[in-house]
Image 1 (cartoon, rainbow, N blue to C red):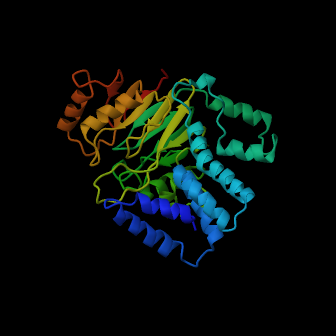
Image 2 (image 1 turned 90 degrees about the vertical axis):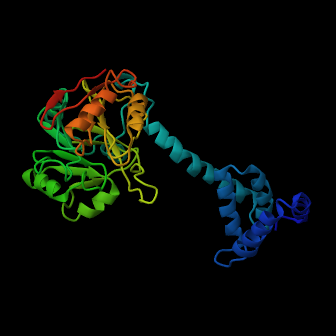
Image 3 (image 1 turned 90 degrees about the horizontal axis):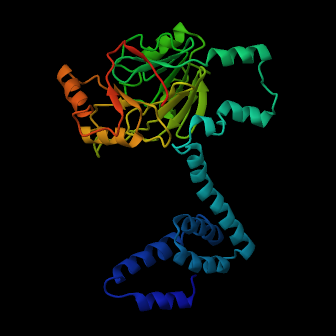
Length: 367
């Protein structure tokens, strides 16, 4: 299929070292896969050109382009395959990178985000779904104050702003009423110290307007119980939850042990004018690729060691880092981590490290 010249060249280049691999390649690629009858050879050539282009295997691409012509593809069809491949290999990566704006951009010089709500409105037209003027003005006024952070048990925190509350990760190690009073709830992943259905149920029963944003693995478990109130998000998504501007970052939980399968995990960056951006990474040391003013630092976990925690703070470079994921630490443990992340430790690139006791609150500021 690749032509006599190709076969002769391969035979000449084969020696004692490469012979076994060439035999394996010939038997399985040509004798097995290409000989299968599930799809025709034209289709196999389309798939092969796509895979070689995506992988950047240009030497193989030249010979398989000639083979595609022999298998019945026209030059015009090959051109279309390459154009289609270019879009779907390059555009998703570019789109993800564009949505993760560089950290050097300040809030003032960033273009406005196209959230899912704005995206739907853009598709319907400039006036579709627009609230009356008096409601729009009131809503803008309701959400122009600073954020306040309240530490709750283990990995759970609440963010408050002008009468609205957003709670992140009300899991089984947090208070039973950790999410009660929330207008919006974010869940980073499915592990029980971050996700507890009884706590979510208590919050949604207390506030019939409250909604949940989470990744698919959690949404599939609770959507039936809370119809219409659970939203699925993933890495790169931007959305508004109870007036808070939120971005999702990350895809996988940190490695606990190579023999333990990794679950999905997404962190949340919550932004408010005057308070900057707060980032909760869940159970991963995800670097969000944007400016972070306040880092909610998973200080202790079965999947981390202190050197990684210190280096994570250095890489994110927040103004201040507050401990979360600390429910397994004793008083002695808090002292040890406080020293290592404080002035007597190896250094956190200028970030201030602080621990809040559960129930304590602090006003957040930008810069």
